[in-house]
Image (cartoon, rainbow, N blue to C red):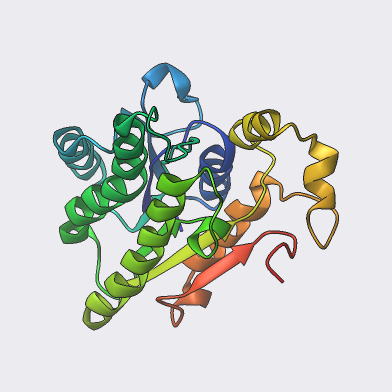
Length: 239
């Protein structure tokens, strides 16, 4: 993987940070985005980028900087995302719905569209980050569920769109992963980590590095014939 370039959005913590660490260990040159540069471990990332992926102009600038620095983008990992409870009550703010959709779905679209001209045919890889909520619903997560369902559909359509270029496009759909985002959600739901463990068939939530390992496999030559597929990593929650 030496001299291959990966762009990871939302690479400052949780799954994104684990993906950055894994790709670096595999020899990639890694550009990673965060909403604030101070959130990124600049000693780990080859090119730290401040970017709100829901801002098209900011996305264009970040991709241009990456291409100027490295010449191309071999792997795109669309990981940036936000969650939030937005029950459809009269007092619920509409801007929360739009923010969640804009970051998770529109952001994936903006980054992908900008990167495509700079990705090599036959070896280019795109891995999108979905969720078990790409397949099921949660009552107070209407925006997040809609966005992640959208990313799944986008992945399938894009895989067909890029088939002639032999650029593969897949989606990883985690369940509970031991991240700050999940821990905050457990607080909101009045759950403990033990409760989350017990909600899975295997009795444990997923570690971030396990998701990163799956991303790395889908980016590898061994996965060259895998495209348009969804991979659930959830400890058996949806079994």
